[in-house]
Length: 623
Image (cartoon, rainbow, N blue to C red; front, top):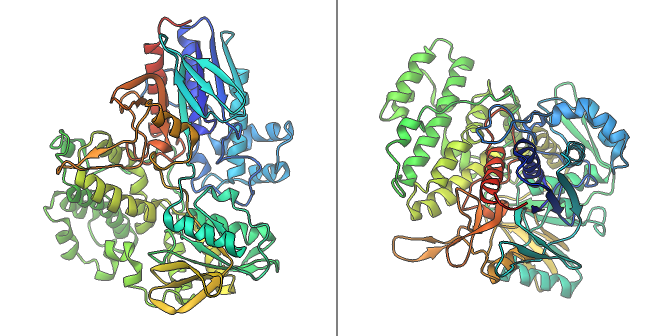
């Protein structure tokens, strides 16, 4: 039995582990030959050990694993192992000493100092994945082989009159019985605007970077003090800022009161950045939760879902309202404990859950209005913070964000409330996977409003990055524009220009413009040669949702069978033996970028086992 795994990042590695353990338990195949195919090797494109060591994950190391545990509801065997934090302190020293890896000295120092609720470098997670691959090699049963080809698969073709497939790379071709594809973000065709900006850069000897992986940004020719425009204030923005400051030799000092001061190396550029909202992502809260600890739902409960069992039965605004109540419940629970000990919290929360209008319970309580959870203020800070382009104004805003995050995920009202976006991910997936929303609501309310809220409020950087940004703004290294950032090619000055619509008179010019964001997931517009080929050959298709008026829209991802994770071909049939999961299915699935978390019946671990279970149950006669 030959199985190829395209993509050697976390998903591919977990799938390989599941295949090995299923074969160990069932002994179903005389020989099981597993082959990883990834041009970047183990860790894939996102997690190379040699990437800039200053780049951090935005998830705590004890929330990262590649192993199953007793919480995972699955058919296959449980095989426990260390999470990233445990590995750093137990297995990492011997592994790092024994392998000539890039950043080895830095990784050894980092592993020794890593704390459970801190943040590991992406390099260290890449090393963990390298160790995990070695671990799999050492545990192979005699009937299993595991190899790696550092190539890119560019096409897959079904071999007529067989169940097998022919895979092609630039230099090779080989047959296989089944394929498990776990691909990540990939560049898209340039939009008209992006193509025009690239052409302008080529014509004027400028530098334009379209959306891509941030660890691959090339700032080699950027000179000290030179302006560089970053469009976007998300995670890629923070990566770029880190590489252009700490990556160039600058460092931060922390005073006794916690205040950070930036000490430049002298070779930093001047960073000018902005976005439509004009404010960076909210900081991740300091984690106080233990293994497997989640806040449980009080509104989005199984009983509530029992009223919405059919496709399109749930109104989008009702879902958003219920989700907001979940965050509000946790917010007021923590707030009462922190500031209103005289209030009977249990009674307040019982009434809050039972009320037709939970806000009425808040209004008649002793809680002062300034302590209310204000969603508009959270999501539209520009309406409440005037002159956010002023360094002192933004510094105050960022300081407030840091202080809220440092209160912790079991103590701080706001950071605990925002944590519900993470704790209830599986509940949200129930809405998506069961297609409970009407198509219009799915497009507008879920993919539009809810995804926007989730991205802005819950997947931000560590609070240290917000504190660092504050120091960089105060030092003049970073200039943040006001809301509604604009950028264009200025034909008169032969430079890129940027400004905020709020203050168009404050205009900046630069020879560098970086789209500081990842490429969008778009099966129809991706430049990934494999996905292009699958669609061209009819083995796959973009997901299309039919609206009530008969029109269609594409959420972005490639279409898969929800129960089996097999590709849906151009005729609407699932393709036996072609399994596809991960980032390129975003839209069909939801929030496909998260790494596995121990102790919470993790979706990625559960899906990996279900995929392998389907494969073993389908291919019973192949030896």
